[in-house]
Length: 619
Ligand SMILES: Cc1cc2nc3c(=O)[nH]c(=O)nc-3n(C[C@H](O)[C@H](O)[C@H](O)COP(=O)(O)OP(=O)(O)OC[C@H]3O[C@@H](n4cnc5c(N)ncnc54)[C@H](O)[C@@H]3O)c2cc1C
Image (cartoon, rainbow, N blue to C red; front, side, top):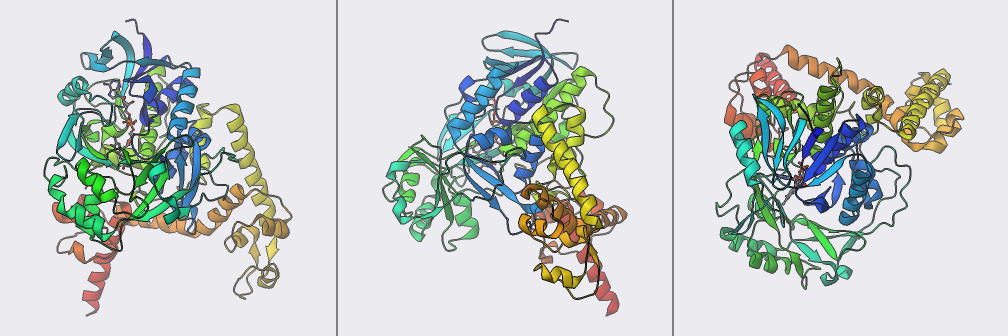
């Protein structure tokens, strides 16, 4: 049968782009179909990339030759590293992005590649005896392909809500995908999920002089592993807070909120709650923080992070004016909630191919996730597996698994446990979180991306040189011996235990100070590599502990949980307690099958029950 393309990707959001890019790298004839050409790489919500857990995925995409980090860096206007005082296992590199620039840079990259961009609406998927044949579109009719990847985000049967005002739309100014939704509903189990976005404010109407600025941090840590420097001009963000007046207005108008009036019943993003949710669930506190994030160099818009809502327009206008700095603010676009169809990802095989229809792959928010990074990770994963299938490559090892990557964790969680609410990545979802760090993503992912030739020659050289340098440095420093007195002379605090330490052991006692490293070993090293080897050394002992915890969980799968009051285990998150109480698992194995359960929660259950049994015995 004649095909127009090897692979057709439906949707040019964060999942679609990464899928198209990797298929193109495999030399496949690839088409990227999007409702609007101008929307390629559009950030539907927050103009930022990264955060804890999310950067981990983005870095893995980066080392697979993906785009999110590199295009993010060239479009970045502000950087922060969340949890910098802790180790890189939980660092959350977060970049504020110039929204228009990101889209422009992404469009330029894709349009210069061999990927064919087609502006059209896909209305149906063509199949023959449970095998994909291509897609049907509104303007171009039938487009035949060996494989189709669906990455339609929040568009399937999407409805947006401003309070009780309801429109059919995938997001603001975008039509809902109703026809395609019919195909999806007929062939998959679907659920309704929801998310929301805050209003956008006109920059000139904000009184910044009243507000606390938040400057970009300058610590040479970027989204992409390959970015050495960023010369973009950095712009300040600003901080403000809701007030008791804000809370009163919102409380008084909750009946006009789409979420609280019952107009929307579907499950929203637990860890990105709306302002209505924050006030109802967490009370007044001392006000709820709002980060005023500029949308870009040439943009007169500001994104007020922290007040996404589904209230009516009038209430939004009123409550904003009670917030310091926003008393005279003008709104350019009101906040809204969007409700859409998502697919139960357990309908997919581990490679993200539909269990029912061969050669149909799904990735991104359609699989019940939320976030650009989660979408990008799935896009590259689905694109990789689709390419392997088309090219009939014989790849035996698991390119992404729970033990080597957050992408592996996400895929495993989604396809095994499914979702009951939009899935967001957290480091606690991984049982190997000390090993799966942002600074060592290249070590975990590169062997595969190198074998598959996914990186360009410059990036390949950078990583090869880094690996070579690391080896030679470790060899050299391990020959050096240091007594406690010698270390004290270098200003390194240590016990006077008489222990002679080699260079690698000395790293455990150090911060990433390249000058101190030079004095100790007479070696010039860059901060990136020094940070990596220091944390390899510091975490070495914990790697074994992580593995032991994992083994213990496997050994105790049948461990009974009956009679345990989950609420009384203080270390469990509210989400985990809620789910355990709902499902009432008999044993640890049952608990591990509940969607949203994390390895660390399972371990806490085991430890708590064991310590309780010990206490009873000793009485
Ligand atoms: C209002 C709103 C609020 C959000 N809030 C948050 C948040 O607070 N936190 C967070 O992490 N994430 C949030 N998100 C989610 C985030 O935007 C998505 O997770 C991410 O963009 C998903 O990427 P994706 O590639 O799966 O889909 P999208 O980025 O949505 O891209 C989908 C693409 O598919 C195209 N498409 C759809 N149907 C068709 C069709 N039939 N034919 C052709 N093309 C089609 C669209 O044009 C679009 O290009 C929000 C999204 C929205 C809309």
